[in-house]
Length: 293
Image 1: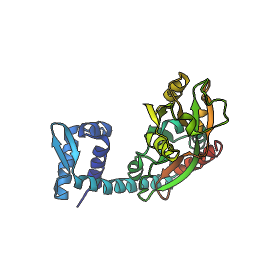
Image 2: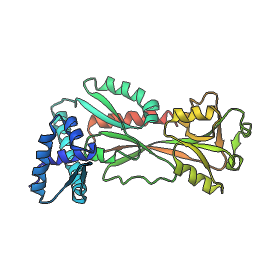
Image 3: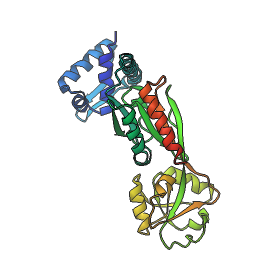
Image 4: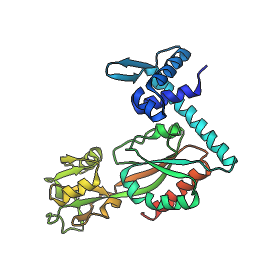
């Protein structure tokens, strides 16, 4: 019979990437975790981890068992939250996974409002770069995930989770000061055929360029929007950035792109049957996002 606690150890090792890191995160010794994993393999009757000089990796069976383990751990954490609510004791921590822009434009007011409503619950924010994080919601490691999707990218499988659209964050064109097209209120992709591009999501740019029959010349790639704006400001290329980012584009020309209604879709992801404090965060996020649309 499989033991839930040992399944949790396997899940933690999968997330951490090594037994040593998982042991530190869980407050155990690496030796203790190794013993738990060895017992799990005996219970499962098959090898779950491949151990070598380069570290530890999951076997195919191990990866399949992790998926079941995530669900089991998530259900146990949900049960703990339900019991805490029945005892009228809010959880000590609520964990939200988020990407950088959402952390800047959505979360400041949400954190303050949540603290007022749940003063005994600490709101913990964790950096999670999309499309990662769905597995951590399944396991209950994250109570809420704020994530996004660009044009040309597939949404990850929901895996039984609730995925709530928060915001269609319109993409806008940013150009260096004095760019030849800066005098136009709306700029066509054809006007930028010879320009260098600074890309936050290359696939999105490629799909857009293909729709307009041009080949984009990507000079720089980074997901750091502050760096993108700085490079555009320095005259090193054009870029597409979400409207929530373009608001801070001082000293840069901001325009709409002709014939395109591009959005970066922002979603909140959570487990079914959310506890009251999770529902509260979702409601606050929804209201914060509506103020940005």
